[in-house]
Image (cartoon, rainbow, N blue to C red; front, side):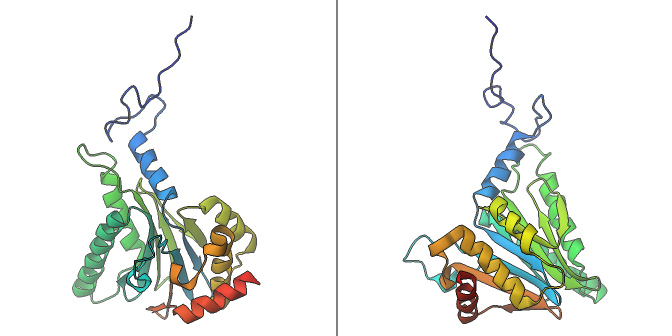
Length: 242
């Protein structure tokens, strides 16, 4: 009787981040990616004058003060980011990015480029996939900003890989929302159209759980961050429900 192959977990290939499985996989990194897919949904879009981020706060405890939960981080005046996965991991990366942006401004008297922030974050993420005694960052980021190259949106994952996107989604329901973005996203769309599309995507996934208290949204225009008020969010949610 032929012996069945043992699962990689039972053979110990997932016990160290530096150990490849026989089929060339780093199982700890793949586990980190699964953590991201269980994280709260976040959407990013480039529109005609800037970049938009919309994210689900996922407030499940009624005793939590909704206004105290911020899921969109400001890295510099011209760069913002949001995350899906382990948010404490994201906070460490955001604080590193903020210091990097300020050091660049002090040293060169100019705003840091968005891709430079992304590369620095991804370099640290990559180190954590090949160093013993560490674990991968269990978080993906959407980094949005405007620099001399114009509006840009980047997505990073736990491996340290990054790509530039016109529109992207991370977290729970990413496959379903990506299908909507592929069909309905248009180049050079207005900010209002971008926000409405983002709320429609959230409505498709959250259904009746979509409320103004559950959404955090902000955009970058003219190298400045603007948070969208709860009143505006409510208006866009009502448009999405029509």
